[in-house]
Length: 385
Image (tube, rainbow, N blue to C red; front, side, top):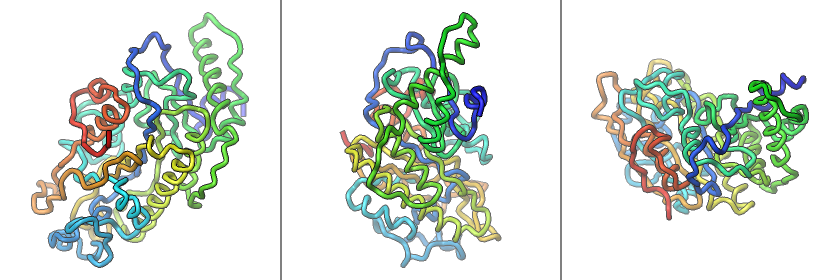
């Protein structure tokens, strides 16, 4: 691989240059607290993830793909988890798992591309923004320069909430590959040419990050042998190193279940639960579980009524998870209102996704959410002080 190829490599490391410290505000954030975002790419079916098993309308809408009441992992008298999420029940019992119901946004867009753009930029449905919400947050409250990067993306080349100019964002497959190929980026010398100076700075920053990422850390805990498990393992190695990272994004693919949903979602949710529990074990091993917050998200949920292909089509409100040693476990939002579907057969939104983001920004990091979210939103009370 040539030096120029490395700087634009899609698989190993995509690097976004960052603004000088003087160009940023001086507000400090509590970035010793780590945020891990887990994208369920394709739009997970929230109704079969957090099942309203006591609602007869659920089984009326889903006579073939509904999760049988006796199989549901009951959380309370009306809601329960898909049986493949059994590993998460230990976290629920320890009050380390918050279940967020009815998450979405007004006037939902049901296009994969556009809707995930809305989630990544924290925009309104008719608003087009070029920067991710984390990028804007870090512009207001910069991550310490001693950190190897503001954020790391694992399992995807799409930086999502870290997109746009102004962040130190790395996208990588695994730490060893990144460190090997970072040796191609020397960054020596200076230049008065702005474009060349920019390239040299990016190379120096790559070298700096590589010097700390995955620096010989060996974790005792085991990770599941699938793509998501490997992504969590890479993320854990990054966090366990001396690097200093504020945010990590991990992607889990395959949730667009228009047909044959039962078998596909069973496998995906099993992988998700295994990966989350393994990541918890790794964070406990290095003493970071109390300073780690993991939150799932995706572009949309699925329609309540099953389709003729044994699947579900693009929908609106969804169920998501927040996990961590300082999470205040329980049910948040509102149960799905299956008798109040809109004209397209979709659920009303109970919890704006930007309220969840505001929780991470204001309650977890102690930074203002106004600029990052382009407005004021109400944090959800799922974090302990």
